[in-house]
Structure formats: structure tokens, C-alpha cells
Length: 197
Image (cartoon, rainbow, N blue to C red):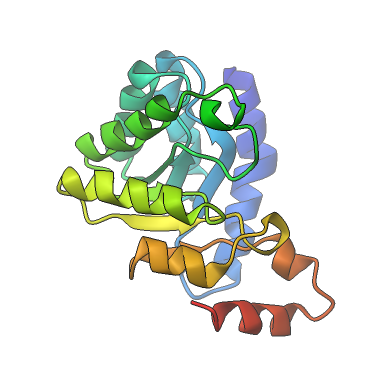
């Protein structure tokens, strides 16, 4: 495990963060591990150490392996000065039990609530599921959180940025991948998509 992290540090995060920093503008670097937070609690501190040393400013977690891992990994990130962004619901079909998936609907919502209770205010929500965004927002606001949302699931996955933005409110970041990097004119695609926010 440690060796794997060291290899990632040597060949992955350091060069990536160096390239991003060299591009200028001092933009925050968010590490999205796809899907971090699914291991045992004991690995959280080592993981966050590598993320921090790799030059990242924040980390995305999908702590599907339970509240013990969620708490330890979030606190480990916070102890390293990393911002924490937590997701509980993904964009694809057959993810939640109500849609034929493995993940219990209530458990997914508990991920958001537990994160809020650990002083997390930034969350990943499914941009192509505006009703889920509204529900998550309502639950988090009930916990006294003014959430910031990061939402994938647009363009290639059928979500409309304007609908996701309406559901999320003003503190919203649309995440667009294939809709930009798969376009013939990347600049124009980015301009067209940002005009919908």
C-alpha cells in the first residue's frame, strides 16, 4: 500500500501538480481519486499525506465503505489542511437501490449528513438528477450548512447545466468533461456551456 502511494507520488501527483502550477493563476488543485474513501480507516492518514505532499489543495471523497472510514479520512484531510469535497450519489443508472443499484438511498444521504457534521460544506452531487440535488440541499441546509455543490453529469450524461444550477443555487460548480474535451472546438464548447450557468 505504501509502495503504491510512493509510486503515485513519484510518477503521478508531483508531476501533475507541477504542470498545473506552471500554468499559472494559482488555481486550487482538487484531487479526484475515483473513488477515494472506500478503504479501511487506517489508510486515511497515509493517503492524505501523499495528496498534500503532491501539491493538492483539496480532495474528493466518496466514503461508501461506511461512517468509520468517512470520519477518519475526512479528519485526516482536514489535519493536513486539505479542503474536503464529499459525494454520496453518482450520476449513472443503477447506482441507488431505488434505481436497481447496490447503494441504499438512505445510506447515500447519510454520507452527506455525516460529512456536514464533520464541518464539510463542499459536496459532489449528480448534475443530471436535479431532484436529488434539491433533496440533498434541503437536508444539508437542515443541518445548518450552506452547501457548495460540484456537479458532473452534464452533456454526455444528459444533464442540463441550467437545471442543475437552479436546483443547487448560487454556490454551484458544473463539472464538464467529455462535453468540452470531446468537442471539435474546445474553446467554443466551454463558452457555450458556461453561458448556461
